[in-house]
Image (cartoon, rainbow, N blue to C red):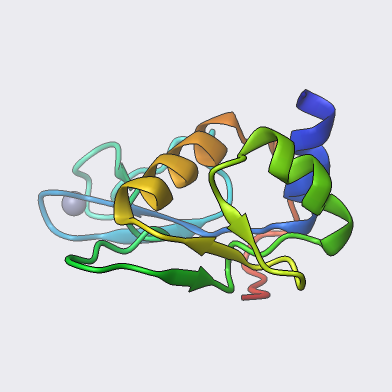
Length: 124
Ligand SMILES: [Zn+2]
């Protein structure tokens, strides 16, 4: 299981957003385990889980480019997240906000930091 996640996260890089609720200070980082603090002295920042999982209302279908996985990983991914559709190019298709949020939270919280790419590099 952990091996699978390390593999997946080797291909997926998601920047997370950390925000200060007092002044709005924002930090983007792929490292969710690190402590992020407000540059204006307000202490720890809140991890904004909705940043990569935008909220929408009504009928919903979202094909995520930022949550794409390597096509080689598709069979393993289907086993772990049977309710999430994957296109043949590895992009994920969500059919509800709830589904996407659940998925993001799950992958976000289980993320292992070992294989992350250097900071500040965006591939999405
Ligand atoms: Zn602040």
